Length: 189
Image (cartoon, rainbow, N blue to C red; front, side, top):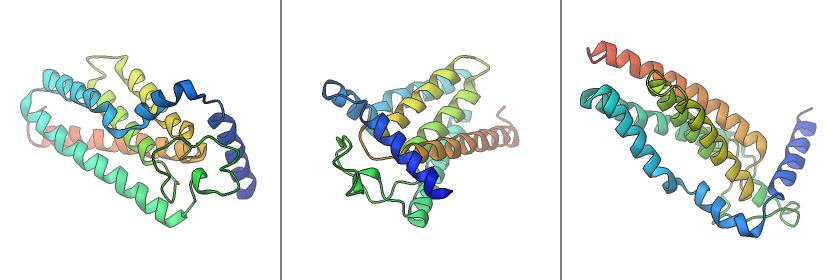
């Protein structure tokens, strides 16, 4: 059963990865770069400040730091626990795929890019939903694009992304609830 699932995962990876083309490679390398979206994060922090004020913003910054640390570290625990090699690390796949990432890395289950981007999207999207009702959908789309970039550059299977996105969504929701609790607890809501 699991072997069949992993085989389908590999086939879907090869299909999606091979949709890429050289003229688009640089775009996807920019999308997959962690530093690319710093302006987006700055904009989200500005919107949180604008709608909630300075003191709640400090709570949000601390909670986001905890959120990203949490998702990133749990991702590493899963990677070390499952030890599923990345597609770019599989000798029998390398001739069938496009590998354009800067580096491969050792293990890929599950994707830290996917979990971190989805956690940030859900967290900020839920906090800002009363003021910008469609923002959450834009952020979810952004997170999906970041996730797909990991297939495009050749470092993650689709199942790595699906699990990362799911974990990120759950984490983002839980830390959203934590921030609401903290705002109420400290009389900032």
